[in-house]
Length: 412
Image: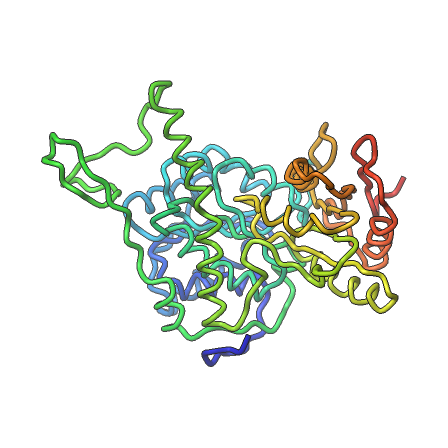
């Protein structure tokens, strides 16, 4: 796709790319607390604000719990809010994750994936964001610094869309993306500003007591409303159904905004949900998330040169889970391998493996699915291991009686 606007090439690491995206996206409030490997994001944003390059209010809080609480408060007051965290910081936010999503507050948060303690580890795996997969947030995973920039910009539009109104996490692998320098194409300030616009809170109709007035859904002393009050069994279930329905509407919105951004930037990532590579005629597919899938593309090319019909599929949007699209891609292949960079203790495989197998269950001729848990705590996943996995998947033609899960790269 040809680039439709002139862009500026900059050498940035992934954290800096996210900070640039936030700078250009008309953010009103940023709540900050440092945690490795996310800290650079907030350092750069603080510098932008100090230098007059970003017109935002920054709130320096005493914990990650407070960072998300402040972001939530700003959002329900009508502001466009942004924050960032990682690992133990995300875990400390747990209570507020659910409050933000249930309040339909369209906060955007960058999560720089890092292993959860203990033992203490500051390197990448997906245990932090995978643990938050059922909190009601949309989850978008990036392959590299360029996509981290692009995904962050799109996240504001997705979160605030009238048919969605849900918070969005943008993931990038700790150190592998966050601290790795890359050439990143930066869009002009006015182009991004026009693309994201300014936040316009959804409108609601007040009860008859107020004369059926329609007002913005935000805290306003002129029209006092309660957000997040006591909600017992007479209405709680229905409010959860509203979140479920919003998630069901989200895939089309994600695809629509992704397509619009691609027309401006010249960059696209599949359809916005899945990013397949040489998958059209593949006998075997390898599915996964994050930066490893960039390495997988090189492995696919090598295997293709050897005459082996292997393809890959990077899952860009994990929540909402693209089950229909996965069924369509997998229906014509002989076997499937799924890469998880997190363990689901006590389960029959990793989170992504279980989701993929569930999506394929209804297929009459579903392919056998093999699971692989790799890279925990930042353990390297070199091309030779990916190639070995691909060859094993390619040679599998029957569904195992029980889920087969391997641990490539782990010492026995």
